[in-house]
Image (cartoon, rainbow over all chains, first blue to last red; front, top):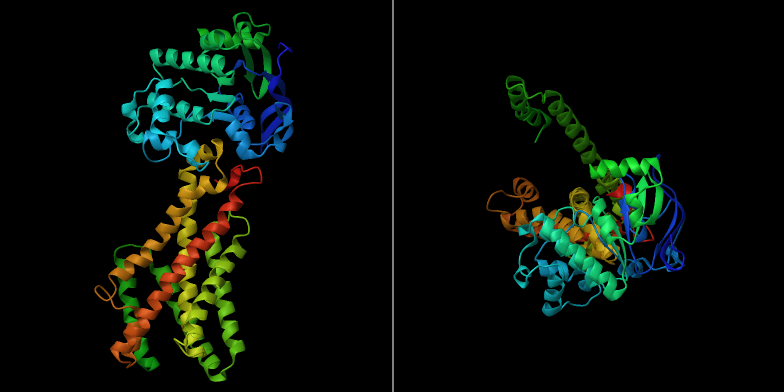
Length: 243
Length: 251
């Protein structure tokens, strides 16, 4: 991986275990600041666990994680999670309207989100203002995913973790969200780590990619490596995905 | 009432036993165990109370209350086994309820400071606190399991554990208090409360029986509110670690 970039996040020998089960093993590597890095790999490879470690929702069993060169454990968890935003795959919502959900990050800080700001965030994810007062139970899977992305943007985090955020979207919506993420990355220099099962998306959008299997990082480099992997296991995985 | 007369009331046990056998409910063994246990437990407590009342010693009164608190604590804690230190949390809750109730009743001379008043009222307050603790823990556990994603979402957005668990905590507190409040709304209309009925049967004036019953209702209301609130606020921090992460085995 190109070393001229300062790492936004650095993993050093990180392991994560639940009981006897090893979810992540000896993960070492960096996510360069201001770039989009995609995480690809089969289900159960440990990708979501890796994202949750970055946001401090869980801590490694062993090894160290650094956020902008500071040990993650030295950062207050609340400050860390506002600084490193995450959009979860299930796009969980709290009871209420789209506005209640969009303003949640502000509410948690004892502040409020103006309707104009809320409309602007909705616009960013391609939803029109009429959605603002809609109850979240009435949203489709794709609309929930968009609201979830918009809500993550409210904290204006400088690192964004995205867990399969386009998996529930149609082809047109996927394109719009891809453009949005690229735009955020370019405009605000936000570091993005994006889990995707869509290898074409990883090649098109990501600057870099990590290929993960069985809790290990098996190959890293520029996203184009997915076009010609050096390792057989990655080659097999890529072929399986593209078939 | 003589024991011979009392033994005639065992007919009320015979009826459910016959029904259980006829309808194949399979409840004969449980019914018999429940009947034998209630006879032994109530007769034992009757003789113990007789001894305590006659001895007129506060030491025995305090011992009785301590026994009630210990029994209530061990009964209620079963529902919150995944909450660290649940035994002490329930014990503290029940003790606070008892102290507040007795401070008000004895402090304002609502009832005389004698075993005859202190023990039955303690029994009702502690018993209610135990039931409320069980109801709260049961519901809280259910809320945590069904809203795990919501708790994780709030933490992920930079919320504190208190903010993350707030909705589940309030829902569980409210839900555990509803039976107490609802039963008070219909009291006297649907059924006469046990204590009041007992007093009337024993020959007390119905108005005086009502006055005591009202006092007990108010005691139960405060016992309900204090129990679920204290237990709730003592329990939730143990569900998270110092990095504000959900402890996996708690959710």
